[in-house]
Structures are given as structure tokens and as C-alpha cells.
Image (cartoon, rainbow, N blue to C red; front, side, top):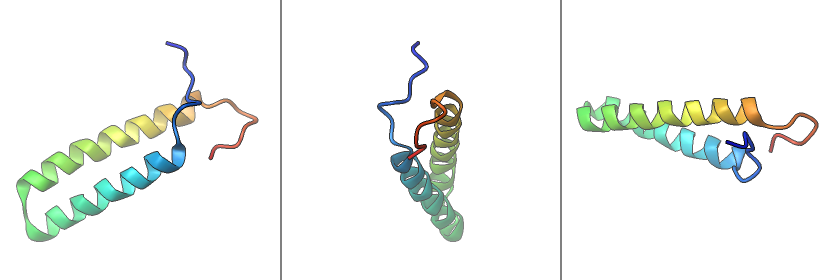
Length: 64
């Protein structure tokens, strides 16, 4: 509602996204469909959250 991202850490979003992406790669490597599907959904959700962070951050402040 407020379009404020002041309580969200960009570094945390990026680290969590990297973790999900690595689990996705691992799932592909071992050919585990459950790992691939669940981590794909999680990774895409985190990408949307990161996009919303970038859209609603206030310009003129540090992005980190």
C-alpha cells in the first residue's frame, strides 16, 4: 500500500535468489523434478520481488 521498500534488504533478496538458483541447478544436475519445479517457482517469485524492490525504491538513496 505504501510502496515503500525501506524494510527490505536488497542484499538479502540477491543472496536468497542465488541460493534458489544454485538449488535449481543442482536439481537439474541430478534430474530431480521436485527440486526443479519448487526452486523454479521460488526463484521466479524472488525475481518478481527484486523487480518490485527496484521499482519502488526511492531514488537518491543507496540501493544497498
